[in-house]
Each structure stands twice: as structure tokens, then as C-alpha cells.
Length: 190
Image 1 (cartoon, rainbow, N blue to C red):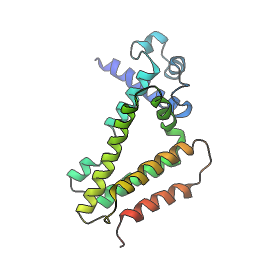
Image 2 (image 1 turned 60 degrees about the vertical axis):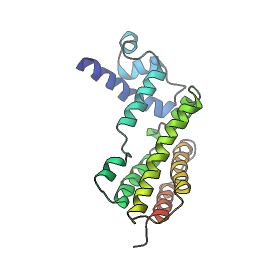
Image 3 (image 1 turned 30 degrees about the vertical axis):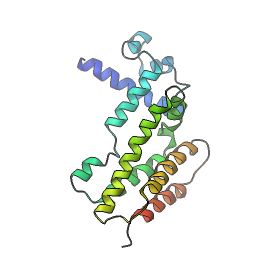
């Protein structure tokens, strides 16, 4: 793929992300993507055949750039509390900025693909958090906890707030209380 073609493709994804974050998956049209990107319909269709294809490319990019991929830090021997602090800081920022969240779009997108595909996507997150918690317990940096229980709290409180904050007003204290709960469940007393 030529460099210009790659740059155009990336530009399409970059300009489409806010559309999906704001309007969800079902309301974004190829016409809206054309308007946001400044491309003609032919120009857009030479890169993507549908909004579904664009959204899937956005998800693929997010997965590749996953800022909460803990494996590199664990391989480097970073402390579990330091990894957790970085992840919780990212989570708190994402919860506070629902306008940048793809949660609604993901929910709508799930209606267009198999349940198994969404289960697989979810399992990646569960495994990542499970591995971090077990890493922290093995290094005696985290309390001994029921890993499944705390992973459920982390994943579903976080995703729930991201979804609900789009439809109800939430204060920063809500986000802080969730982060505080996760920290107190995992970190040993200092």
C-alpha cells in the first residue's frame, strides 16, 4: 500500500472516530464520513466499502495501540502498583470524557455481529486484567483477592459508567470513587 494511500486511510479513521463516539454505530453514514474527511464518495469507497468496515478498522487500530496492554510492562518487571496506577489513570480520564467513548457504538455494533465475536473481544480484556492481578499477587504487591470478582468489578463498573455517563450527568466524584474502590481492593496498606 502506498504511503499516500495509508495516510488517507489513517485520516479517514481519525476523522470517523469522533463521529462514532458522538452518534454511535447506527447513525454514522458514509455521507457523514465523506463530509468529515473532505473526501468524495469515490475517494472514500476506494478505501472502505461501509461504515462497518471503517468501525472495524478503528477497533483494530485501538487493539494494536492498546494503552492498557500490561504485558510489556510486566515483561520489563515494572511493579504491579505502577502498572495499575497508569491503567486507573487512563480509565478515570476515559470515564470523565464520555464524548470520546465508543461504548455506545460498540453496543450498537454488537447487534451486527455474532455474540461469539463480542465474547472473544471481552475475553481479551478479562485475560489482561486477570494476568495483571495475578502478577501483582505473585510479586506480593497486591492483596490476595478473588481474581474473577475484582476483574468483574473493574471491567463492568468501568464500562457501565462509560455507557451511563452518555445519558446521565456524573460528577468526577463518581469516577474517583470507582478508582478508589479498585485501588483499595488490590493495594496493600502502606
